[in-house]
Length: 560
Image (cartoon, rainbow, N blue to C red; front, side, top):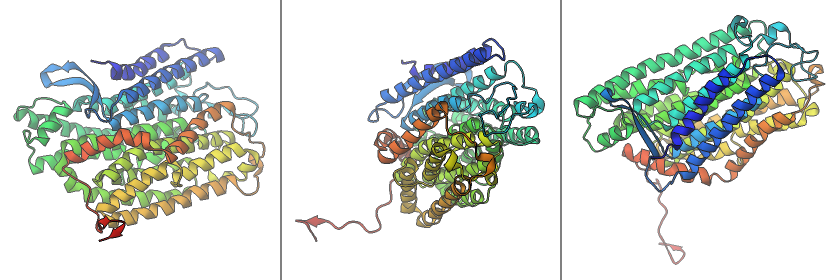
């Protein structure tokens, strides 16, 4: 039995403990050591996650590299890990983004040291003591262990997210699905955005608490459903939380869930995943959390943590409750398309750059969930690709926005203008992120959005048509944001703004390269995820709809 998956989860977990235990201090060398150790650990995790993908055989068993260790024997709970194509690529996405986030957040946890010029050099306002104490509400985290805590929390999030993608025990998944809320709470509330003004500490605290309460509520509802599933399964001789055992028993008719019970359990699981995803109308925590976080933490929220919700819809909702999934699919599709249009419309009206990206993400998650519950191979393949492509493109867009905000010291769109004339590389990368967000052909999100729309239209044409308007609205909010911040006369406050530095280029370059590469050649990803998509569809006993107008048979080059 290979221990590769355990090692992939254990390395960032142990790294979080090691990073937190490093010698404290506010001197540059000690902070640099902490950062390099954390970055090195994330690089090792990336290598392990990539190895798992390389060893995964798309033509082999659905779950591979499986491991199982007894945990709570009396309840049939095990520490069981296994990877399918979908979990493999999402764990790799997590492992790719974490070192990028660390590099982008290199100075986000530095202790107070007000310089003569701004924290990012000339062109940004001087950092006052009050601004630099933005480590936590009331400055309570402004201490010698601030840097260690920040990078340890990022590694902790990485470990818990990867366990969630690999877990094949329902209870194990639930534990880490909830546990990841704790480090995220401290990253939002304790290390928030420094450009929020004098009320930023209170706003960060509010955003962190709202994030925690919403997701805890979803988790409590899911816990009741997990217990209910176990009780029903135990009564029928399946006293286990093992996902493979349960899904096989359900598919074979050995474990029977009554219609009412299956619907209730489905709703319990789905509610928790919809909160985390986030699906309209359970989305309201996201704009606050992303707006008050650092750019790096905002990327962790929308590109990493939120993907656990949509992934779990595929693995648990469809796998454990196939009939209920089909029953509720039309209603979920309606909520999804509302989220697509609603998120895009609110993005257009935003005055805050980060909140605009947050509402854009709500719209994108609507596409992902729509693809999942269209119950077609194109829709689910597109949804899985969308999770990856959205993570990469939104990370690029948000991190460049963070670099922009750090220079000017403001999140307000109206405070910018003419940036492309003084920082052309920054403006160019910001444009690429925006074009990816509106799914420009040739960039990665286009492929996934196209598949989602084709898959949805095949079964629910009206939903597919309405969702298409989300593309038009995306062009509006992405291009308007670029026009208002990057073009026009150069505002006096941005006249001395520096362009991207070497570290910042190292952050953006791989994301831009992946956005272009996966836009023109997505085959490596589709080859991995498509067998898992087909297995998921077979669990819900669905096949792709036949074409309405089948192609006529041909003979000798002529139609019969």
